[in-house]
Image (cartoon, rainbow, N blue to C red):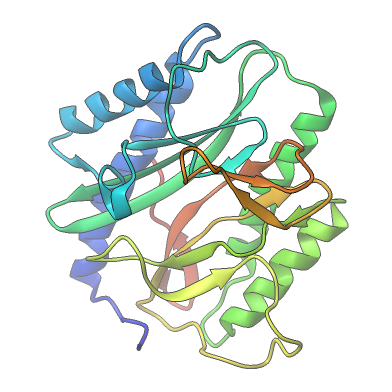
Length: 253
């Protein structure tokens, strides 16, 4: 399937939905406190999205039951909101999609709950810094495999490993489009595969593990993804558009 090229008017619409994602994440970051349940956090996110006259894109997507992925501590991605209470020292991944007028936005952060350990601060920083590094080096003509390889190298240099089997993706009038963008090189040659072009819009989302990148999907909820090492993970994501040969972040408040 071909990677779609968006017109400037399409990117303007994507900028709106992604701005709503960013505002929702900021709202949650401001009001989440120890003692709240993951369900309460999800409800707060869904209510805020509704207040923007938009829809929570993840709710019902592939059968996912909520509007906010709440990935706590060892859950790296796709955490299902439940009655678990967040407490001081936890780290919480928040992944949100918004649909507005048929266009989709998507972004994620991992936030500290109160004071966290120095090790967890480094874990979160790896996800955020690798994302921003990747965005900074993107240029038209670069291959997506080169981007994946650069992400993998950055993550390894920080002493962590990328989660395998999950990836960034294109986005537009569907929440997931071509291409798939792993945070690691598939195969041996980064000088292969499709090139990044002006007008492409896609999500980059480093998913960070401590020792093993092998994913384990929860047997009970069928969604929550952990590393086989059983250790905490982190996740950051932005939606970017390629404009004037460089990446512009759309998912900003």
